[in-house]
Image 1 (cartoon, rainbow, N blue to C red):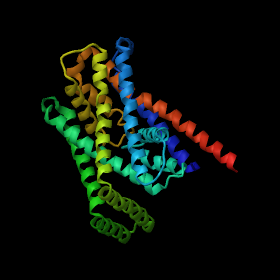
Image 2: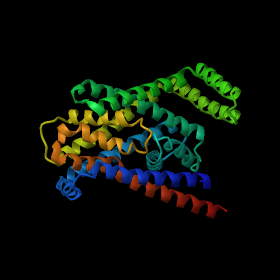
Image 3: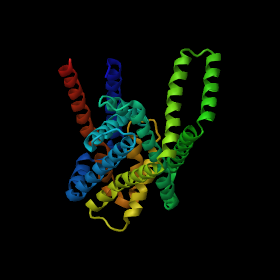
Image 4: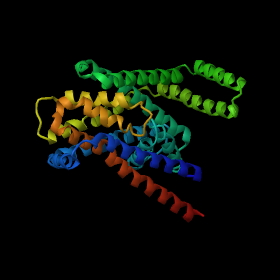
Length: 342
């Protein structure tokens, strides 16, 4: 990793820490933190551990996807290494707005394991396609069954999330399955920018062509590996089912009754769709606020803040810390390997 990349990563980490501090101040400034923590400690630890297990399975399903797709290219990758790359991707996605930094760094670290960037990028493209489809299908279905809960800011965030994710999926599919049209439109736009004085436009054209070539390869892969592609989509759905199940673990950890698993699951699906497209690292601030607005019916006023803290702790903050250690250990290992091979 070059110095410029390290500097950018450190800036992102600093922004992340500042956003974290601001989020906690805004969310808890008028509340008794001692009471919130005491309530959180009263939760059944076995259900909380089940939530952690669901998150580990969330990573496992993505690792299985990456391993399986790369295997179809003749690339050998162990499950543990695929799991490592998935965790590395999670960390860098958490550090960057709209999770844009995760996949480029995954491709970079896979290249250190002698996996061609063209293959790893294509594996991640299939994963992204699955994520967009799963987000839309689970999110829209959940909204249709919970329209009465969508009011005020949550309603508008849900509409924005639905629109942004829908457009992103449409653009992704057009780029993959109508590459010639996409190339003409993008080249026309780049030419327009060149005529009005934008500099270094040829470099941008090359980068765009490289990305469009990956989309074209994605279309070929999906057509020639239909069974593997369908299995990959199913794995992504299972992956997000694990993720969306975590709030129900917290619900049961407090010994609550009255709402079914599917009702609580649906609330998390709505939350994810409403906040995933926001240009904030880890959707910080937005995820916490939407949880407090959306899950009130499930947890009630006394438990709500503690439930939010536990949910975000399990689904995000805990694994930011864990994946930070994975990234650090991987960097040290790569540097040590370079010294030994000199």
